[in-house]
Length: 88
Image (cartoon, rainbow, N blue to C red; front, side, top):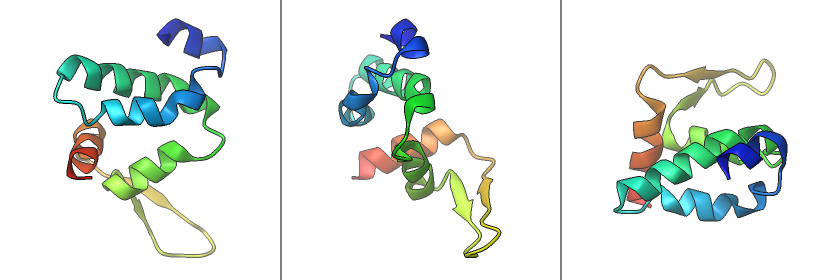
């Protein structure tokens, strides 16, 4: 599925399934979810990855309507995303 995701968007409709893998107790399942989300980011027409990054604190919004800026924080984004989904 990782290789297929490089060239085709047919894994993207399973985004929610992949996202739910991030909550798994099984580290292998979490890794699969994270890897496939990363591979399918290019097909993300609904800005789902941006929402995940914003809600989990990976990106910080500057609050402006014009000149919107999202700043990437220095903490490991993978840990922030994982913490966000575990808390949900």
